[in-house]
Amino acid sequence: MRKFLAPALFVCGGLAFLAAQQAVAQDGRSQEKRVPSPDPEPDEKNNKENGAVGVAIKKSRMAAQKALPRLLARSNLAVSKSSGPENHGSGPGAGGPALDNAVPEITLGLGDLLTIDSGPGGSLDSLFNRTPSAVRYPLGGNDSLKHASVLTELLGDKTTWAAVELDTSPISGRINIITSRSSTETGLPLSAYRIINVPTLDEMFIFYKHKDENMMIPILGDDELKLEAGKPMKAKDVFPRLKQQAKEVKTGAPG
Image: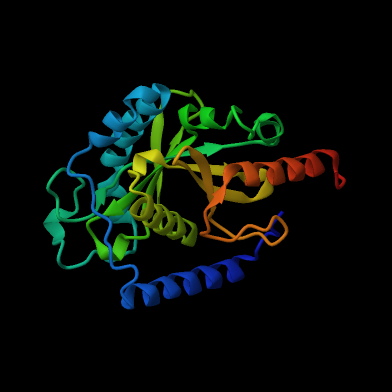
């Protein structure tokens, strides 16, 4: 389990990470730009077969779209001049920040880790259809906000979605960079990706299926679990490690 980082160290690490990403962009290896969806409908179409996920995306997108002007106004981030003050909306055709495709976030507890079967014919595929606890909307159309996401969460009544913040943290930047890079490499749409959040173990992953194989990309590295940040791994290799650590946390002793 990764040790908790002091706020100052986390901020420094985040700044170093973003600086490194800027350097990569300059040498031509990350020149691709995130292109926002031309309208808010693709998410619903791509997730139509997923039932609960499609409903969650429809409701969360409406909440995010409505809150975006307010969240931008409250942020201290500068919007590039090319967008113009008249283009701060997120509707079709807007030149400023716009909501990209949704990336649903699934929160797993210790009980989930202990019961999920990552073997052949196991229950990993069911995670794609699970109602998300949050949905992130990366921002496109503006270079100064390319690391930001509008974070929406499902409220306690389990039916209402609310946009809770414009997330500009290093974690948001890593999620945007990793999903965008993987989408380019695999040819998968962003709607094929999920974020798996395991708060008890302080772990987060990008989760997707490619060539009939469930894959996970650690958002942060973990030496103890031999996880390398940004490196794709087979889910069947990752979940047993998480399950073992969940057992240790639950019993209070190494397994």
